[in-house]
Image 1 (cartoon, rainbow, N blue to C red):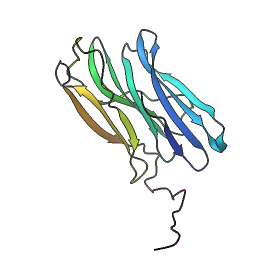
Image 2: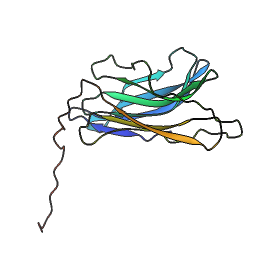
Image 3: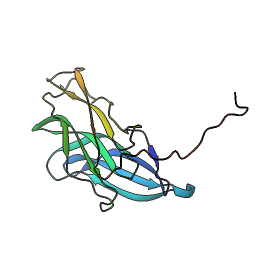
Length: 179
């Protein structure tokens, strides 16, 4: 569904991944944070984000900022709600295995017709390199019912708990011979 993402927080190294799962009568986003500090992998936290509201959530993607806050973006919809773009998150200080409520990025006003059997695969959550705090999320939605008529929405947000001071590099570059 989405690439495995990596984050080095200096005190721990994390891999994050997600996929869609059946959650009751809907679909939810199952996400994991694996601690890979020192080379051995262990599950630090995991959860299925599927509030009991009748909405399905799929096509997830997630990332972690420089202090360990996590954001997950996804498509959200149901028989009574056109596919929309939403996200949820958790701050590093929050209880493990939890995400906040849905936040809307784009309300969809169209649905895919049944003649098309797939929802596209264009969903990316990334952290901006300038401040290592701003999450950038892009995904697709439909403005009107149809097939192959997706629109793209790009949005950004950040947690107030993330400092906008860029972290010091975890590495140095050098050239030999210097020229």
